Image (cartoon, rainbow, N blue to C red):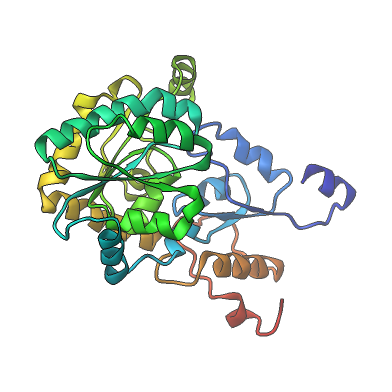
Length: 311
C-alpha cells in the first residue's frame, strides 16, 4: 500500500480484515492509517480502533456467520450413517491443524476423553482432522479406548459441518474452530498450549484476558478455556462434565452463540455483500467521519440496493 500510494498519491486504499490491534501491538493501526483510507472489519468491536487511528471502518461481518448449517434431518441422517443411536451423546474433538499444537496438547485431550468415557461409556467421539496433521491424529486416535469417528479433510467442509452439528458438545484447541462450533450451536471447552518461550512473550504483550473470540464478542466468559499449564485433563474434564450431563448448561452456551452470530452478521446480507456495499459507499464519498463513530454491525444495504447495475 505504501509503494502504491507513493506512485499514485490520490489512490484510495481499502484494507479487508482489520489487524488484531485490540489484542496486541495497537500501534499497527496508526501505521496503517498512513497508507490506508478505509477498513472492512470482521468483528463488531473492531471499528472504534480503526476510527481512533483516523480511518473510516465498517464491520461487514464474518464469513462463518453467513455459512448455511445442516438442518435436523441432515444431522440425524449423518448420525445414522456413522452408526450412532438417536440418544447417544457425542463429543466433537478438534485437536488443531498445526503439528506443534497437536504434539503439545493432543495427549491431554485424549486423556480427557478417556475420563469422560469412564463416566459415560457410550460417548461417541467425532474428530474432523486437517490434512496437515492427519497422520499423527489418526495414529493417536487408534490408542484411544473405544471407537472414534475420524472425518478427514478430503471428505470436505460440508462433512465437517455435519460433524459439528451432530455433536452435543466439543473439546477444541483455541482458534477459528471456536467460531465454527459457535455457528453450529455446539457448546464447547477450549484449550491451547504453545512453547514456554512463546507463552512468556505473549503474556507480556497481550492486552486481552481471553483467547476466545466468543468470549470477546459477548463480553462474557461463556466458553471455559484453559491455556498453557492450566490445560490439564483434570481441569478439562471438570469443565466438560456439565456439558455432558446437563442440557441446561449446553443451552446456556448455545443461546450466547446465537447472539454472537447475529452480531457477526447472521440473518442479514452476506458478508461479501456488506463488504461490496461498504467499498461503494466509501468510493462515493459517503463513509462517515471516524470522529464519534461506534462499533457494531454496519447497516449497509447490499451493493445492488445502492447501485443497481453497477459492478
